[in-house]
Amino acid sequence: PGSLLSVAHLSVSDVSKILTETARLATLAPAERSALLRGRTVALLFYESSTRTRTSFELAAKSLGATTTLVSDKSSSIEKGESLKDTGLTLRALGAECIILRHSASGAPFVLVRETGLPVLNAGDGMHEHPSQALLDLRTIMTRLHGAEGAASVGERSLDGVTVAITGDILHSRVARSNAMLLPRLGARVLLCGPTKLLPEVAASLGPGVEIERDFNRALAQSQVVMMLRIQRERLAGLELDLSDYIARYQLTGEKLAALAPSALVMHPGPMIRGMEITDEVADGSQSTIEEQVRHGLAVRSALLARALGSGAFKGITV
Ligand code: CP
View (cartoon, rainbow, N blue to C red):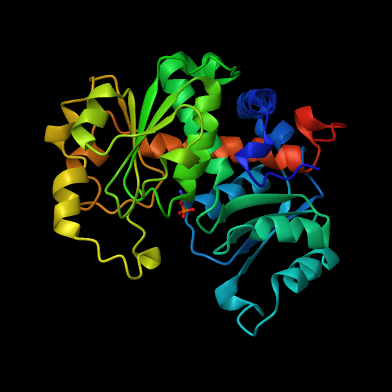
């Protein structure tokens, strides 16, 4: 109960409840907020580097009054060979009531739930999913398109008529996978855009509402939102990508941005590599939502922690 392992496990009504609670928590006075998880303990277990996800979960938990502890693979007994199961059981024995897990292996959060019985929030597992990122991206889009009130509740038609171009290293991207599953369920059309090496011909396995458009300019011309992705050099082994050709075709420049409507959004989950997938001009431009996404991450992750620990609007609800 309370875990978030995959967006596939969330109904549209679940998503709406999470975003409604996100909005409500943002209105609470600090004293009321910090009473929600007072006396509760949250463990952050990170086997891969992170800035945004780790910090926002930690700050969210602290702002709700929880005690947090961070275990990272580089400074713990994981370095000595301790297994995920034993690390999870150790955290549980120390009083952790919820574990936020980032892991390089797809499916690791499912193992941790099975072995510990604790609620686990998937903070990114290998090339599989990053569900809290998709939720914060959704809140960012909803807020920009429909205002704060519109973002507080979503339904199956909330993103009708909205095309989102997800561009770059789709193959390795858990952010792309979670967004491509979530956004079409709210009515969006998702265009996946990138070269064959980073976006293989997998049309048969794409879900409803998801298409491939290899030409970046054509994708931009059809989109109200463009989501740029980092090339994951750490996962590229053997792919021999021609980076100058990639930059020429897929880098989002001020010139290419002209194909988008002035009201269109430029998103990036971070970390971004300026000069690779995006130029300074675009990253720092008025259409960029990059810092807003980070702020929405803090807000959405507060609601996910409340949900995991049965607090706030989720009190007494077994999800
Ligand atoms: N977007 C994201 O997951 O960033 P971090 O790797 O910094 O957490």
